[in-house]
View 1 (cartoon, rainbow over the protein chains, first blue to last red):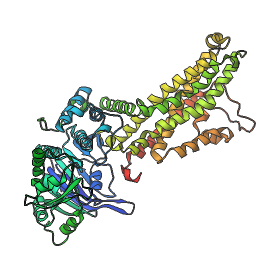
View 2: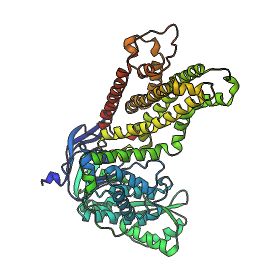
View 3: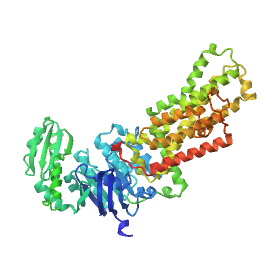
View 4: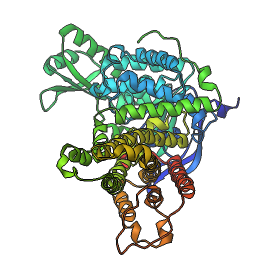
Length: 316
Length: 286
């Protein structure tokens, strides 16, 4: 088996939408493990992922996934699972039906599809909601059912476009643990995010993309060190008692700033250690019974971060 | 998270059997999913109403016996031939095929769900065939039922209907109408499946086709052949008067009409499959 058959390989890949650049001259070889594809909104992450899965065709260059191409979906999509950014589902289906129906299209028998569906649903902790219509799911549940659908046929390559969007802290932790479990089993897990701290939590290696170009790739360590010192993570917590939360988080030295949101219903926190902050948030919720509606990393200054990283000042 | 065994690359034995078993299973699975999400719910109501609308006129007539109490079977034959060829075939069946087949791909793009199919180990050509089969499975039984019911209601109250049916041409007429119904679903299905893959909105092209089919009687013989209705009309047991301006052309024989229509449909479906094979999923542009 050659290296090409074990990696996701991009050879001089470009994609143009008319005269608009999607990605340009991407040459990469993605090994097994978790690879974070990171860049600001509109940088070309989704284009690269859609090219990988054959939802788009490259204008120039070629892509192979473990030696296969989307020209032969009957081979490739037995090995590839893709959770896209599209928050849309076939109408009228329950979570169970959604996964089971597409497993049947994979060619599995009813019994096999049923077994695999329940396994996937259990892995994302949606067993109790499996019989409900997906249309009635929360954003976080929809993300998890999409993830379950992508892993249900037990692929070797998992492509995930912004998979942590809309998840609460507990679900984020569980999903990240699942990614690690899958990577430890030898899968290629390609994860995109515009939140650098998110990728930091997940990835073994990182591909930094900006304006359609891959500007850096490699180990996450360098990016992480740079980030913690120069650009604290920014998180918005929507909750019922933001002032209480502010008073608790201010006691910790990694919290640089905590500001009540303009509408009075949330707290904007800047922290040098996002991991520790999320743990702290869990503790506060357990201690005080704080009702948290959403926890959302914000990218208010993320473009500045990328500019920094791709300029001479960045180590990556 | 539950403690499930780590995933491995495994394809079940039943999924590996080659080549027709798994492919047929995949097609059936697409049909099953399409029926569930598009036709067994509220989305299907409009199609059912349209498909069964040809029954309304003979039903009203049936419920009001004064309108036909002195009529003979021959008048019922004329009534049904007009009802079938002008309304059922050219309007109800036509529009139902636009709605069903024209939206097979288009609706997936609007719903942003087409990628789920594209990410399965199913060749896109087979997906197109599966979607076409779904449309045929939906429209043919609906219009068979609609035609049968309308035929029954049109003839039932007339004197001499038993004689007409069992000792006259009645059953042959019914068989011909049912054959035309099946062929119309197959033919228009192919046309609008292709249009759904070619155009962002199949409504305007569908109107153009409706106009083309409508003026078929005015077209020179060569152009008449490029229409579905030309072949279907020749199979109808009672020809309609096309008026003084009609340009006459030899009606094609059934032995030419049926294979010709099926061949034309195969070409339409093949072109749709070719279109979908090269299609990119980029919902933002829609």
